[in-house]
Amino acid sequence: MPQLARLETFHDEFVCFVRATAEDGAFGWGQTSTYNADITAQVFHRQVVPWALGADCADIAGLVHLIERREHKYPGSYRSRALAGLDTALWDMAGRRAGKPVASLIGGGPGPIRAYASSMKRDITPKDEAERLVRLCAEKGFTATKWRIGAECGEDQDEWPGRTEEIIPTLSRALGDGIDKLVDANSGFSVPRAIAVGRMLMDHGICHYEEPVPYWDLDATRAVTEAVKIDVTGGEQDWDMGTWARMIAMRAVDIVQPDVMYMGGMSRTLQVAHMAQAAGLSCTPHSANLSLVTMCSMHLLAAIPNAGRYLELSIEGDDYYPWQRDLFVGQPFAVTDGQVTVTDTPGWGVEISPAWLDKATYTEAALESFRPSAYGALYHKGGKP
Image (cartoon, rainbow, N blue to C red; front, side, top):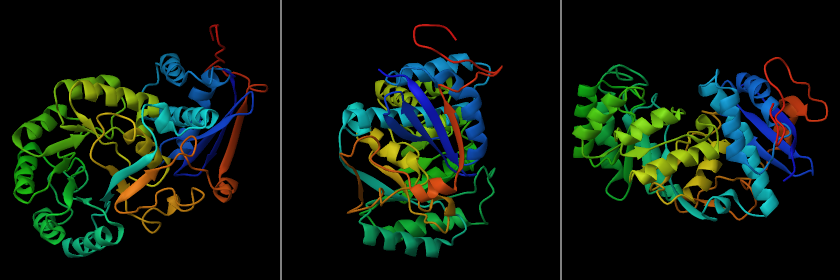
């Protein structure tokens, strides 16, 4: 296969798109993880580009693994967030070359994906949230929805006193029996409080309990999982394969929720999905905004055999996430009857808005002009860096 000849980044503070181009002119679009994207772009050019230029475009997983080893002194979230830009761009390139959607390259194919309406808001009263979610379910045909309880990493302090105890029964009654009900505590509770809230959720027909306790405490998470009879879910923050192996082996959660961009791209996320499948656990990826992460999650769910029941689809618009305005050409996340669609368009099936790209900060690294710094060297096929 042709070598990777050029890597370009286009970023603002929130989003960084990556365009990868091969020596024969084939290209693909990817994205690093959102937020602090200007920092991630620097990591990308310092720690990813030197090993990626000149590499075989087809061996995506192998290249990602190479960079992990070459940058072994710098593991962590930022390295994975930057790697996601390379990985997802190369998957898009592979799909465009083959004339197939990425889903078809990883064992699935185009088609509809059931979505749940995911609310990100805590600064909303139970009454107003109930009215909003009932209306959206009716308008868009959603058959599942998620709302927030507790306070983010709140150490048992609610967003305001009594909100959790009020919002659970209020929304359960308002939504009725025909809607699957999910909640997210965002690491908000201690184990005793999480178990008490979990039993309240059971009493009100809620089926999904996300990050009930600090996500980094797997023993605490397992204690909640073992104490309640609804699905406890988690993993969105995690990128380290050792952590994933432990989480799955100890069955800390009932459902794993890797984030494609936090993980470092599709290749590493597929590893987690396959680990979960071997353990009999389903996978419902985290995709909390309408950037490329949600499109990647759609393709993942369209392909893996242990896909969860639905896609997380943020219902927050440009008033809540102004940075996601006009990222793409067209409406790639259009909802019909509570479903979104993986089309047969090659690659991820989206094009980045030229107007957005024109306003972004641009950086280019090209094989013919790249000069390795003291921090890295070019990797050439068949040789050593």
